[in-house]
Amino acid sequence: MRALIVSGAPSGASLTARLADDAAATLRTEGHDVDVVRLVEVGWNPVPGPGDYGIEAFTGPLGDAAEGALLAGTLSPEVLRQQALLGAADLLVLVYPLWWYGMPAVLKGWVDRVFTQGFAYGLHDADGQPRKFGDGAFAGKRGLIVTAAGDRESAFTPRGVTGGIDDLLFPVTHGLLWYTGIAPLRPLTLLGVDTPLWEGFDAARSRLRERLVGVWEEEPLPFRRLLEDYDGARVLRADLAPGREGFGAHLR
Image 1 (cartoon, rainbow, N blue to C red):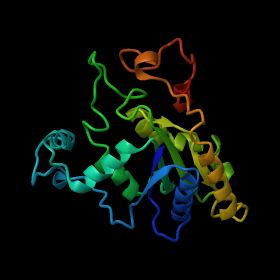
Image 2: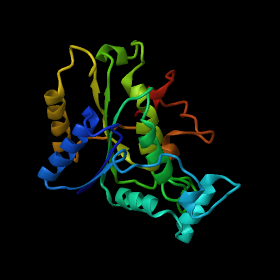
Image 3: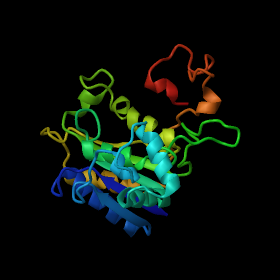
């Protein structure tokens, strides 16, 4: 198996940078091929633009430009290299600190530039149905989020001040991974890292290693499929999870 680890760590000395290194070492010890992209270290530009597509200016949607460049073979070499790494991977591991309830800009920008139209989305099956939310471009791959946040663990419960951690990560587990067909695994969340009660780096490393050793046998999060569980308006069928609303209703 081959894994791609993409690190949005702000520096090589940060907790998430060390976890990305440890993830790579663990997977290699288990006999897997591993590619690691450390975005800050390579100076990744997070802003997509016409230069990615071999054009100086474009007045239409950038998504169309990206798909056209993909077909014409004019995508920038650095985007093509990342797409090749992603295409070859059986497992995508995103490692990042939780900043302002989301990914750091450098990692969000990796997604924005690499997950282009015609490559990651905008695809249709033989019947003309959209391939997304379960049957996406990357069906067959697995995805794991490894993230760290400073506030105490209780703050990330449904009644906590930040809201539930699963809800905060829904845009990535469901809106990025599942949307493109990647089966999302339960995120590994390291919470309370800025509090005196945090168990520390050694405990975090142990949790990460344990997850990665069994990562190929884990059951993914059971998100619902677009063409099976939603009506023509893309609303959850009335007979499914009656009376329930919110992110949790989209789990089987």
